[in-house]
Each structure stands twice: as C-alpha cells, then as structure tokens.
Amino acid sequence: MVQQLEKEGVTCIQMNFEGRRKVFSFLVDGMLVDTGAQSIESDLIPVYKELSFDFVALTHSHEDHAGNASWIQENRDVPLYIHPKGVDRCAEPCTYPKYRQDIWGIRQSFKALPLEDNIRSRNYEWKVIYTPGHSDDHISLFHEESGRLFSGDLFVTPKTKVMMRSESFPQMVNSIRTLLRYDFSSVFAAMLDILRMEKQ
Image (cartoon, rainbow, N blue to C red; front, side, top):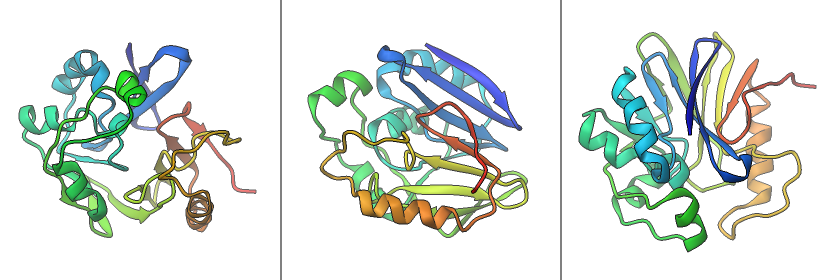
C-alpha cells in the first residue's frame, strides 16, 4: 500500500509493508530521493507516472531504495545519480539473501551517474554528504537555507539490535557526527516516520 503525504513542501511517498514497517521515498523541487522496493512496483508505478521530477538521487544502492530505478530509467527518461562507489554496483545484477528478496523484491540493473559534491534541483542547491556505515555508497542530502536533511538509512532506529555483515557501526556513528555539524531543522529519514529533530 502506498500513500502520499505533504510535509514542509516535500511529497513523502509512504510504502507500507507487513509488520507495520514503513519506507519512504521523497519528492522535493523536482528531485526524487530514492525509488522504493521492487516488490510493490505495481503500486508505485501509477505514482511515478503522475509525479513530475527531473532526476533521481539515490541515498544508496540497497534494493528497498533503488528497487524501481530500472523502471524509472526505462519509462521516465530521467537521469539517476548515486555515490561513485555505487555506480558499478547498480550496473550489475543484484545478489542478496532470499529473505530480503521476499520482502523487497529483486532490483534490476540500471545505469547510474556519479554524484558530485552538490546537486541542483529546479530552485535549490543540495549538498551531497558522504555518510557511510549502513552501506559504503550511502549519502545524505542537505539544503542549507531551509534546513531540510534527507538522511536515507543512516538513522533507522534509536536502539540497533541487528546489523548486516556489510554495515559498520563505527562508521555510522562518525557519519551521524558529520551530520550534526550542519544546521538542519527537519530530518526526512527513509525508514521512520518523518522526524523533526532538535540538536541537543
């Protein structure tokens, strides 16, 4: 099931999965942040056909974030961007455990372009911040004037209980510390309800 919510000028595309887990993609100023899981492609396609966006910025290459990138590339004729470490990964068939395939579907290969230090949407300049830990190609996006921060899966839960072998907790902590240097006011996290956070 897919719902659309509006928060602070951002269209939040909420994807609901079994177990009450929510995953979000976001649309702001013609920039689509992440594409959602392939397993609910049939629900997302009508949304992506209707929305107006000029490019896709992927926070990382995991299948719940890039699962519909190949459909968008084939049907919307817009460029897709990812951290340089994810470019080759996206171009290859994606292999990951069956339990993840059952939940998120199977991400098809697609051609992504490498993100640079900044990316411009229709009216805004976004800082691309390298935030590894959850994956080695993970980035966050920050707009200084509005204070909006898109943090992907860097912060998923206050108490981490399980981690994938490829994840690095020390890197996550360092990446969170990196983000805390920025004067953000709103955090749009991909696997949580939309958050408003105040730095302590």
